[in-house]
Figure 1 (cartoon, rainbow, N blue to C red):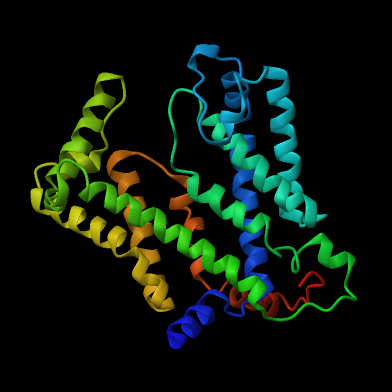
Figure 2: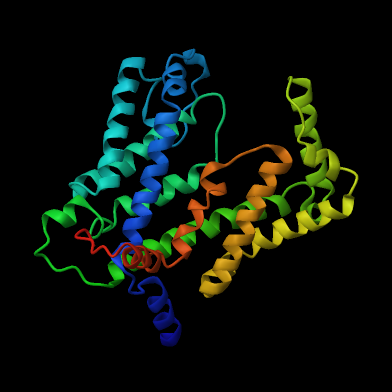
Amino acid sequence: MKKLLFHLQQYWFAAISPVRLAILRIATGCFSLWYLLDRYGMLQRLSRSDASLFEPVGLANVLSGPLSPEIFQYLLLACIALNIAYILGWQYRWTGPGFALTLLFFMCYRNSWSMIYHNYNSLVLTVFVIGWAAAADALSLDRLSRQAKAVPTTHWRYGWPVKLICAATVAAYFLSGLAKVMGDLAWAWIDGSAMRSQIAVDALRKEMLGGSATALFEWLYPHTGLFFLMGFGALILELGAPLVLLNKRLAWIWAALTLSMHWGIYLIMGIDFPYHTTGLIFLSFFELEKAWAFVQRSLSVKSVFA
């Protein structure tokens, strides 16, 4: 038991560079800012929807009804302002947790209208972990303003948030696989017929609503053997996801294959999950500080932020 506890401690509280956590902060912050700005107009229209369509989920359950469009706009602007501070690492002791909570509430509120979108759950979880961690000890305005204060090159306080993000990421995929095998089809899902039918229904719906199926799906449809390979591969990647926590090289291979799966979904079904297809969801598995050091050496620049 002591040996097991020792290994668990070594894993969860591994000493990691503050630069890795800082890069995760900046990457997730830039993506969330893009999301908020890109959908600004749509979100404003959403706030003016019929109140009967409002069914609160998550933190939005604290509300007795939808927010007024004016209050919603103030919330959206506050979220954007905190998002920028989160990226810059400015007054992070307050703006980090502030943005984490605001984004969580905002996404819960957004999902309280018409349908629940799950494709940004991992982003919200990642930001929530980073927002409460010491993620501004490098590559931040806070770091620039207190250069005299020494920051360790590696420390467990930068390690546990990264490990927690990795665990949350693989948990999301594992639950997705579990939902498949615990559904009506159970393990029959693995033969690919369910995937083939699901994609066919999606293609038919698009055709009926004025869209069109992708050319790749039209070519794939008769090839049932390929759907078996895709169904089998998807379950292996999802149900086997927790195993990648045991080995970093295995994690890199899993990340590459899972990224390929998301691109396959996009090319076959035309469904894009930007946080996944950009690979940002897998960043926590990589030694980002080494890439940053390489960039610094290549540009012959010594950063005052790190």
